[in-house]
Image (tube, rainbow, N blue to C red; front, side):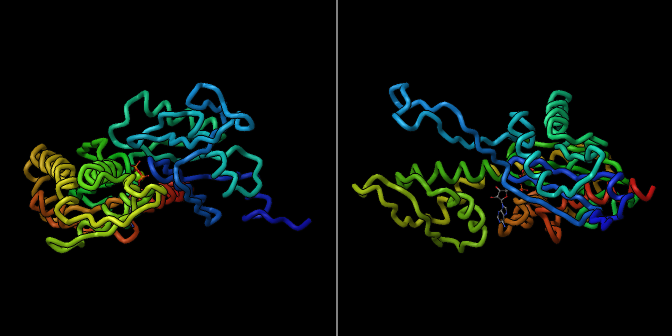
Length: 331
Ligand SMILES: Nc1ncnc2c1ncn2[C@@H]1O[C@H](COP(=O)(O)OP(=O)(O)OP(=O)(O)O)[C@@H](O)[C@H]1O
Ligand SMILES: [Mg+2]
């Protein structure tokens, strides 16, 4: 019989090991042995009873689709939604195997017992046995190619959509961490509010993220164009808005300042020799926030440190978790 399983019959019985990064905006799953990586927005569609403004569903529209985001601030807030999302994604990276898949799953460093329990429940309901829950910045450091076994301390800041996770690592361990549930989604919400306040406009979906991404590259007194609805046009058509560099900075800066202040706080909390090592090495930046123009300079510079963005900031966490799986197999 021709066997299509990687590793032949052994592969079939070995089942599948997965690295899982269940994020606020994006979920990434890697099946290292099979060379597969699946990446999707962390959104699930739900169909439920529809109710109109009167509380009565319009005829023929008794059921409506809603979009649910099961992860908020980096942690699972809707177990069933997260399980549905993972189940569908695992189905996409799965070839056939007899054993239930096993997984290394990533979580923010500040996830408490309840939050880790909720994550474990969602992953379990999606049919995966958890091998270990690992801290996201440690996985991100490994996945970025940093020498996490180094005896010298290194600081990594992962700025995702819902959580900014700051960790100082040495000899494969996190020696100090601080996470805040403030990240890219807050930058986008602030820009959305600023555009509403200055232009009386509701931005088209995706425009706030684009404005945030471009803000750092705008020259002083520059402008970025954006599409949104103002209500001025009777047909409801969108207009093109000119959003100034100043409007964007006023929205974004206070949030970046809180991240800078947290990094400075971490630095002040370290023993002196560790702080000196971090100052010498600078900060490594990962996550979607690291892709924003000028972010490394803004964040690290604000804390009087050097900052570098890793090569593949969006996939650092899942790559690191996949490497952890591979090490288990070897070791
Ligand atoms: N190329 C890019 N330029 C600018 N911003 C980006 C880019 N790619 C992603 N982002 C922003 O980064 C955020 C997503 O980052 P990421 O995928 O690291 O978050 P996440 O892992 O889902 O969230 P978290 O780790 O906080 O739970 C989004 O807000 C998105 O708008
Ligand atoms: Mg993330």
